[in-house]
Image 1 (spheres, one colour):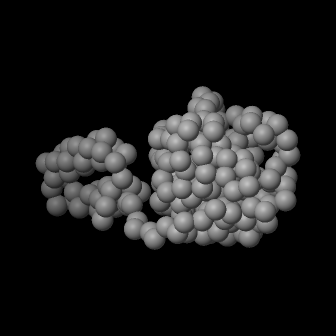
Image 2 (cartoon, helix red, strand yellow):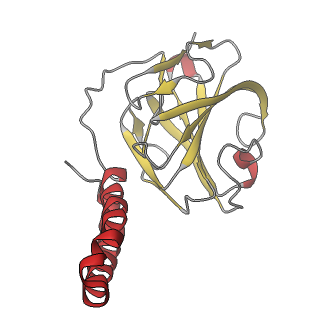
Image 3 (cartoon, helix red, strand yellow):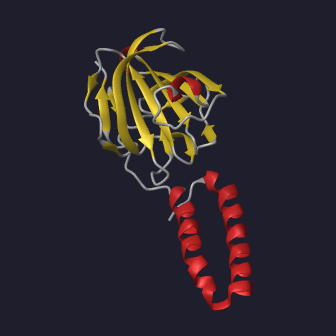
Length: 216
């Protein structure tokens, strides 16, 4: 199983903790140490599972909006996007549990025209106000027919580290990685009002593969 580059520090700490807990358990608990080590081993394994990098065949696309993350669609609504667009837009929000792949992918192809990091709070990621009050990053790509698509990584109550690698002027390719979030969070995508939405609330998304909307 291939692991993401953001896993190095976390897995090193998790391995050291596992060795310490295992050593102390065997020394003090003897035979009964197994009762403690089984759940600890499960948690240790979940750390590796969280940082997995699945192989996916990404197709080139222009007008399609691709799911930027693995997760569940929790919101589709018309909102005022006040940071960049300064107008109404359709917001699609996808929530990621700690068991989902947490690679963040460009939802649309084009050129990165804006990026900004915002410090903030750590409300639970499914809270509606987390989109504007939590720690977050905002990226904008100008794509098909000069449409500008805004998308936002949002840290949740558990997620405390957002990473994004793109810069203004970079080429964006739909479905390809631009960042990562540790451990459970949300991604919002803001689209023009005339966009054809092809997903619905409750849908499970596969990042880089599923089409969630189409630009016109």
